[in-house]
Every structure is written in structure tokens, then in C-alpha cells.
Length: 306
Ligand SMILES: [Zn+2]
Image 1 (cartoon, rainbow, N blue to C red):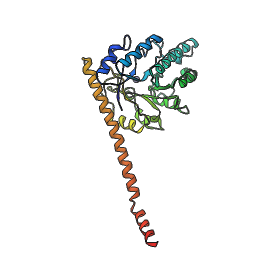
Image 2: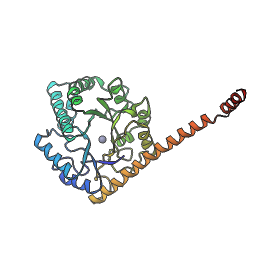
Image 3: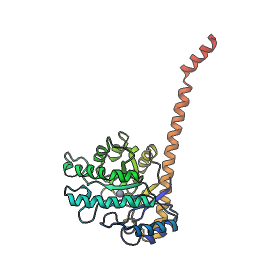
Image 4: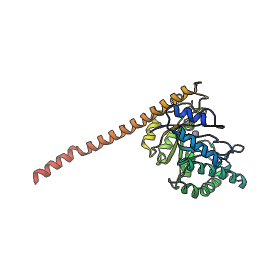
């Protein structure tokens, strides 16, 4: 699995080219488009063409793209106000079209930051607009080969939302930092096949309190368990890190990117090791089953009676 990094590791607005150049120089071949992820910006056709040119220039592939919820009011697309909902829908449609033009297959969307363990999250205020907006966007997304990944937040709620939906259209973006700030998220991720709905990864670390987006292993996230779960999931895309320089303690951009690339490789190695370990276990199980002493005795007895 190739390492990938979010484009907003320094800032998320303005000209992305300098960052694309440096990301490429550090050895990355894949990126997560994260510019303008929380603004009202609508990308024009010319802008997207320029981005495409730069991607070719720096030999980078956009694997997935962070759509915008809107700047002034967060989560326009989940608003019960018709005009706001339409504004949100337009923003997401713009990112779906952009993703298709950039040749990437997954668009990420946040859901409201309800607290895990809330007995009564205010579902009625946004769950209806959520389903409505997703239904309105579905035809265009499917036609252009784009799937939508809902990002945790409240993972239990995402699990409920995904139940009964088509994995060809909807899935999960697992943010390990958001997961580390909450309790039991890895247990939820492992339950009822939820890990097989992963379409995108936002790997990052923190101290279990703040949403720091530091480099994996700089905080308290359980990387052994996270990489094991990824290895057991149906996800086979890049090891995408949504990290920033701000809280990393590294001031030099080149040094930050080099460390990020090395860390991506390390995570990829851990995922491979976990896969190998599981396959070895399975092979052992199979061998033991076929070397079952009772079975061997029965076979030998049968041979004798022939
Ligand atoms: Zn994230």
C-alpha cells in the first residue's frame, strides 16, 4: 500500500502547487485533496484543468477528495432550511464533478460531531436532510464512478446510517485521530463488517484529547491494532495520512514530508505484516485440520479394509 498525504499539511486555501511539488519531491505518488475542505469555494473548470496539469507535472494521483460542508454555517447539506441545503448540495456536486475530472473515486463528507454515548443525539435535525441530499447526489455520483465516504465523528451513527445502503455508493472514511479522542471506536469499527465499508483513511495521531493531526506514532493511537484492522478489512487503497505541520514539532517542510513518507511506509509494512501473520495462522489451522490424528487413523483403517 502506497503512502499518501493530504494536501493541506501547511494550509488549506490558496495556490496548492508549491505543496504538490514538495509532496512529490518527498517520494509520494498519491494525495488526498484537502484544499478548500471547509470553504464555500466552487472550483471552476479552468481551475480543475490547472490542477490536473500540475498533477501530471508532479506525477501525483488524487486517490480521494475532501468535499466541503461550507464555511459560514457548517454542514449546509444537512440543513433543514431549503436554500442552505441546496447550497450544500451544489458544493458537494462541484466536488463530485471535480473528483471525476481528476480521476479519483471517493469524496469524503463530515457528519455532525455528536458525542459518542449520547443517548439522544439530535438525529431528527439532520438525518432527513442527510438522506435527502445523498439521494439527490447519487445518480450523478454513480454515473461518474464516485463513491461517498462519511467521516467519523460518531462512528455508531455512521454505522446506523450505512446499514442497508449500497457499498457501491456509500461507505466510511475512518479518521484515526477522531477515533482516538473517543472511546470504543476501534471496537465499533471491528463490529458487523463496518471495516469492510472503509473507502478512505485519514490516519493521524493525537494525545486522546485534542484533534491535533500529528504524524502517526507521535501520539497515543493504537497503531498495532489500527493496522491490524486495516489488514483485515476490504480496503486496499493507499495509506492516507491527514496530518499537519502545526502540532508536529517539525518546522522544516522537507523534514516533515520525509518523516511523513517514512511513517507511511512503516504503516504499510505493519499492514503487510498483519496480513502475513493472519495467512500463516490460517495455513497452520488448515495443516492442523488435515493432520488431524483421528482423521489420519480413519484413513489408515479405510486403507486396510480395502
Ligand atoms: Zn479527517
